[in-house]
Amino acid sequence: MELKNAVCIVTGSASGIGAASAILLARKGARVLVNYSKSEEAARATLKARQAAGAQSGGEALLVKADVAQDADCCRLAQAALDKWGRIDALVNNAGATKFANHADLDALSAEDFQRIYAVNVIGAYQMVRACAPAMKKSGRGAVVNVSSVAGKSGGGSSMAYAASKGALNTLTVSLAYSLGPEIRVNAVCPGLIDTKWVRDGYGPRFAAMEKLYRQGTPLGRPGTPEEVAAVIVWLIEGADLITGDTIMVDSGRHMGLIPPKL
Image (cartoon, rainbow, N blue to C red; front, side):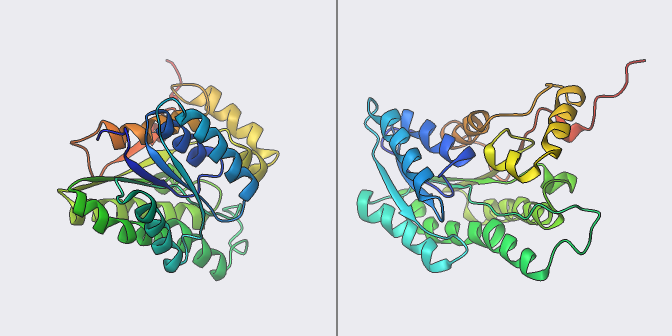
């Protein structure tokens, strides 16, 4: 897909992977809708950085507050892009929710915790695709990238509810790819440990031990950065014309298991 003047919606793009994706898309000349649900200050900082990145390439930007767990907000996001630019070419479902909870403590999560996490991570992604698909179909081609997690395959991560929701998102990715082809490609990226403020704050003192595990136990020997994940997301939109229904592990090789001892 040619990204120059393409219209891309990136949910949850106030910070982290979403912000990095919005900025990289801008550098390639895309017109980007930046979305946030709570962090307006961070979202405006991303918008400013996105505008700076797109200044030379000519890409425009739009900032919209919306909660993807609400179907009406998803429809409003899609309509905002259509009202401004008349088309939608790509969707990055990056908005996510979790509750950091010890997996060994089965009392750490409530039904309400599961419902909120699924509402954002799974139902929200579905609702956004549903809102954007007609415009993509009309233009004849489109790309969706769901930001999942290695936790969806390993069962690890910030909580059981989070891992389960990302497993569901991986399955949803395949189902959507079957249903929306040939015009729309649907793929997912599954990051491992990514060094962001959200992750560091969420794990607290445990982050240091997790970082050590990545440095000593993975083939690539380090956690990732938001920019590295964004590069894969943008490639799936721009350059992966024959790939759909796939889940790309972006985790320094952590999904293969720890490095086996040398004999």
